[in-house]
Length: 129
Image 1 (spheres, rainbow, N blue to C red):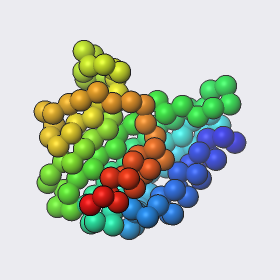
Image 2: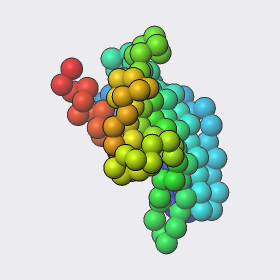
Image 3: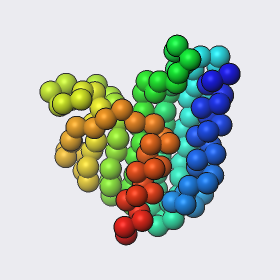
Image 4: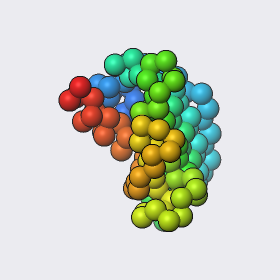
């Protein structure tokens, strides 16, 4: 079952990523051809990360359909970045993929993303801090 394998891979990356201090699964659902995962993460720099991803399996491949990954400071008061694909900004290149960079108002184009992709990016970003 590809959906279960995707969830297993995502959990494994959360477990082994050097930027993840701890994580809690808030909600998880899996079916034959879909899945949903919502996780709260404490990063090694004490920042907070909330991840939510809904995906489907189509033609033997996993496709992330909806996602929201929010990175905040340790107090959860300051937004560092939020990656999502809500259909808010139709005029941006790569619609609906976008990033709220540093504030709700500063919205820039993004690309399709998964939790595994985000962890790889955070490993690069936090390595330089």
